[in-house]
Length: 542
Ligand code: CFM
Ligand code: HCA
Image 1: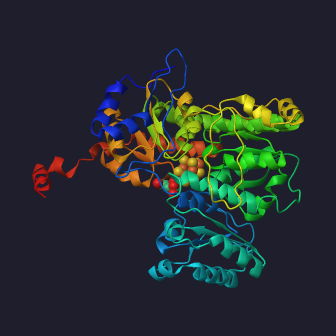
Image 2 (image 1 turned 45 degrees about the vertical axis):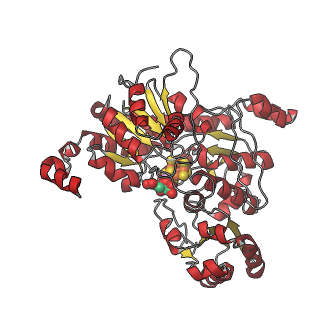
Image 3 (image 1 turned 180 degrees about the horizontal axis):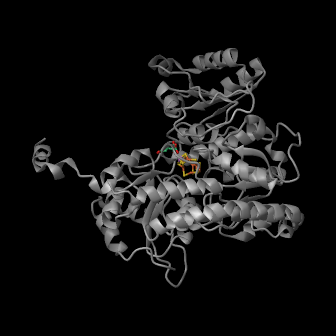
């Protein structure tokens, strides 16, 4: 394996840990991994999906953000009512930049609205169920939606409002689909718990309601593509050109109607493995639908994923069409790649994002000849880092209340035991590897840092020590990083740019990154006390 940096990462790691109290340092040490497989090629273990030490400035968000903001947020024909203080609803209102298309004028799009029960202290003391009922009634009277969903925020869990019984009662009364999510912010350790609750809820309350067969000969669902900055539009364009029908996307440019019908597709293609693999597994278990891991971030990765899908269908015509699309699309992309590569080759990137992008975007940086010297997830699990061989099934809890985080089974035999001979034969006959993919650690170069749940302090130390040419993270990190003189790209929202997925998206990315890493502007940044030393004295006194 090629080395990504010649710096002594062990020394840097001890310097970072030195500042922490002993117990904290011990915990963080397991989450800061130096990736140096050497000859043995063994994947190092990493501490992940564990509680952040209080007081540390984490990048993470909450369970409610994962359920309402991430999974349910990008679907236009459902009214999402947040049961809680108004701030929680406002926080998740269109901040995630998922775009949507409205196919016809009368098709509903509630995504631009912000619905909340606006709980007050009086509701905390005497209970808020009555107010929730009123909110559901009001939303129904004004908008006449076919689906309403309700999200619990922290105070709801604390006072014990039973949103599920309210939903059942109102469902009966109004005759439309109404269901709730117990996704109180404090549940679990991050957004990840919210993904799980959301998946269970959609599976239980929506998937399978409409058996109509739609689309053409090759029918897939795209799982884990949230249409950030219009990514899904580009993927839809490419699939369409290949003659592949998209039955549903969980969840970006999506509708509840499509979710209801999604079980009729032939195949689930999973993009963000962290947030939605639960759904693929449940659909496999209940409907026997196979799934595979794909990635549309990076031009090469896009081509590879299209081939993988075509290979699954074992259809000569489809394979030929996919090759044609790739051939037409890839030439202009390669030209742009070469141009940008000449400007970016050898530069260093750092990626600390969510639960899958810190991995996927390494493909795009590699296409630019850039090396990722450190990367990590906010809330990835060990399997996202260490890779996953076999996936045990998930039990759907009747109430979506109990979340049992997915455990990683490294034993393919376990998977086989759960399947009948017939099912196994069917899967094997396809000759497709459904259930093996490498994690972030395996795909990174030698002598790199892999850091889980990185803190603000560690970010600053890392920048100081490794001097990256670009740092990718979220809005909370952005300005501190820029002030340290390093270009910063948000990989959640794309800083209002994008799309970055697919072929056209890759070109956008090459252009944006080559511009950013070649601009001198950041080297002119000087802290106020560097220009006026007397300020340092003032701050020291203050
Ligand atoms: Fe999946 Fe996402 Fe991500 Fe994620 Fe997110 Fe997101 Fe992300 Mo922000 S679902 S894990 S919870 S790819 S919202 S679209 S950008 S942290 S890396
Ligand atoms: C979330 C959403 C978020 C936040 C992005 C950020 C997103 O986790 O609640 O921190 O900049 O992508 O919008 O991940």
